[in-house]
Image (spheres, rainbow, N blue to C red):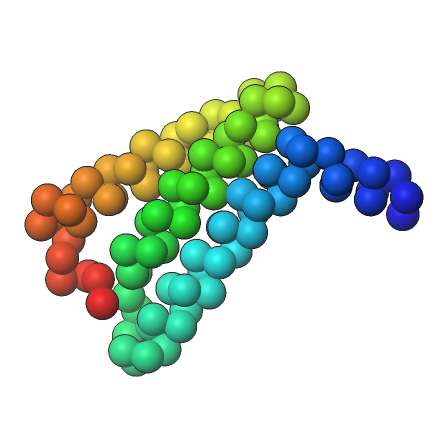
Length: 97
């Protein structure tokens, strides 16, 4: 237990934990928005949290030098960015509450 606590208080571990918290929060936001509208919706906040969480976790993955983790996060950032571009250029306004 002490080893886990010692690891978690390291700045890079905290950064990774904040990134993972962003990923968790985006699912809560999507769930609440869908329940309110009684249909499946993906709010814009979902994509912003995805981008923030992905960026923070990518930094953590680079620090860990984990190529599989790095690749997964890097590709995700492209998808999140593209969705935000579509939203802000009018391509997906109907899908957002």
